[in-house]
Length: 267
Image (cartoon, rainbow, N blue to C red; front, side, top):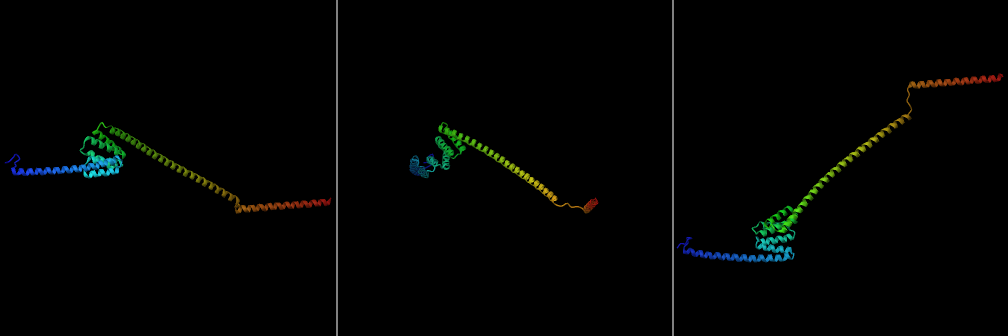
């Protein structure tokens, strides 16, 4: 007998046995998954207890053990991200939150993941990324007031950052102008100093020249004047004439004296 599937009674027997085996395998898989889930939940519960006690490092260890049992556990990744965030390991926390947001999870989980991702970016001073994360969170939960508040806060911080950077750029430009002005002033001062030194040097040179000329004049006045041979002969002739005149005067005086004495005797 052939049924609609084209199987005889013998084949139906083997098919029945195969079905029982398949069911047994599924039971074993479900049981194993249940055991793994229980172990995973055990580590997560232990991690949560330590997290609430603010023992974030030990909580991280428990969450890691839970992920060893089930690497795709969104709950394990989410809680691990929280413990890393509390330890200020924002880079690794960002990776976990971004991974959860990319998973096929419900809107609430996506919103919370993007919200935490935005907070982590804020702590890292990555304002553009934080703003984008908060906007994504609001796409999945538009009425969340915490996300709205954090988004506005991030925008305000971004504005302040831009204003501060603008002021810094203006200060840099002003400092550059001041340095250039100061440099120009120093160059001008240096030039003025060089000009003054040159003027002083010229004055000193002029004074040296005047002193040298005066010294030459003094030397000329001190040295005897040189006369020509003709002038010397004329001077000697004049001296001889003066001597002859003097002798004649002396002779005349003697003659007069003799005459006077003779006159005195005759009287």
